[in-house]
Image 1 (cartoon, helix red, strand yellow):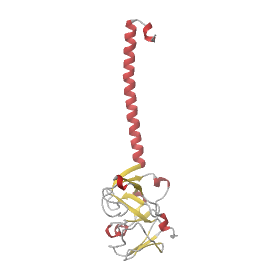
Image 2: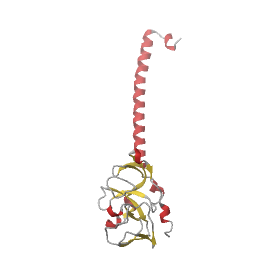
Image 3: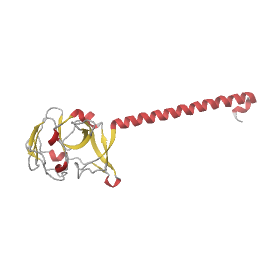
Image 4: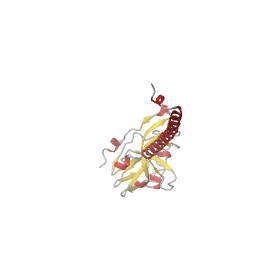
Length: 202
């Protein structure tokens, strides 16, 4: 027999009414808890990973316009950007804009770009299989990177605004490391690690 059957009708009515009020409060509390946990999870994920829309030809053939990429924003909390990494950063001349380029030089490096587009790092000419072309629309020049400076180039060298134009990227402007293309699904891929390209650099 149900436990409620031992009480009077009046008591039974009061018991059910009280339980009804508690149930409603409990459901409200649980809904608020779920909402808060969802919000906290969203904030946590957003602090660690962020998606970006690619707009422009400067990173072809690695990245194309209309692709979406995921960027690991926590990566550089525990390590430093490495040569070959594809990074997203605030454009040094207008920090309201975010750019995506490839790291070529790290602090302490001497980077040269010759008239024919050949890139040398600390005197070592590098062969870059990810580059669309070696066209260099800018004047040949050499940069000696200071502490917390990174030299970045687009993979589509003939159609890229990058460190050849506006100089190195300060470390504080780097948002994170681009890890994968996730949309369109047909383009989905993890971005390859090309650190081996720079293995000869001291």
